[in-house]
Length: 372
Length: 258
Image (tube, rainbow over all chains, first blue to last red):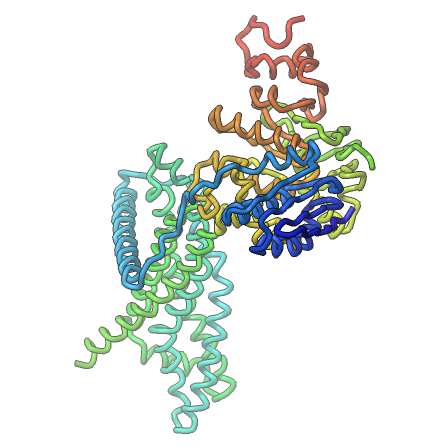
């Protein structure tokens, strides 16, 4: 039965006669009637008559509790009459006292907030330093055969990170090579320097585009996966389990991943270099009538071993950035599923930021060394 | 209105392979029914089937007289909104405070005024011994407190039917007793019918009116605790008399005395 109320005023007192169920479904309407009444200063005594009321659930108990608080705070009176046994039992669920909040969010001032972020960043950097040191130490142990990796772990990681990424890296490199060749051909032809498109494609693919693009794909694909996997393991206490068994998570989990990305990063980059150049070569053949042999010969004349070394060393550094960022941020996940999502997002952002920063440093250093 | 809130008929349920086969079970209004059995016997699977999380391979689950699975999604949601479920792993949302977790069903499914919502949450948290923890984050409270917060969330709508999966497992005896008392008060004050999966004998004796024992993919015994304790069925005897279910040395006797 839907709830309804009749309000009777007698001087400074009021009687509310409830009819129907005092339940969640009727709470909005009832509260809209009861709240203003309890707020009125001229009502010194409020009586709620339950004789016509039916079932009362927690929302009814909560409303009574709120009314009582309000009336008593202002030294006024609330009386409940004609309660059934069931209604009495429901009201007995209401706590008699209010506890003070157990946990409060400490709000930080601006300066404190900056300090907190600086401290947290410093602490995170130090933790990452320790992680790198520990991983390198175990990796040296593995290479020196003092320690061993879980059986098949390195091969499994190489397959996951590398073999499965060949298609996407190859396709994107090819498309990028084609796009650059189109753009370059149009501009260079206007200057009568069409054949120089081979130089353009070769140098930019080998030194810049292939390492950078492979790193971005690895960040989204592998770095995020490492962070999500390790983050989930942290949240599910699997990392704690390893530690309590005396198994180093760095040796068991990180060395295979860092080892794999160390191999996979440069390998995919090398593949990307050649496929990207092939894409450019095909466009040059159609758009400029530049024969593939001429394109290839021009490109090889222009490129030096130093260019390849530049691209491959960069790809190695990028791979380590991705691997260690994913490992570090994944292992720092705490608490719940959202922290894993946050670790994954931060891995991508941090990796891309440092990849671009390192790329800029490489470009600056090599330019200074070459042209001074 | 029917007094049978849960009616399970010929239920076969599992994942790739059936875990439970041809199960019949009814739960009447006002009862506290315990689902018992050893680890892996399928009692939690049974609970998943009853809460709409696992579609049966065969048979039917009826809640409040209506088939749970032979319904549109909307109708199923309406049926499930009349129930509450407290999971074994508390399943609190880590990004919300304890208070926000408990208030979630009220805010999403009802139009209760905000002030009343806050008071209901405070009162329900007080009832489970967590008054004052509204602003705490789930990862800052203990496992026992998280379980109690989950129970508060499951019961905040005063459901007709409350499902609890191992509500007191892993808790110290005092906290476990507190949860038992809370469940009893839910029934007494709010008339909530409760189906509880447990293997805590102490808890069982305090709360359950009736128990259903699962083993080998089916129900092996059903009745009051007294009836079950006197049972000569091997599985029931081992459960109630704490006889180890492990390989025995040759010549050692095990199971119920003949």
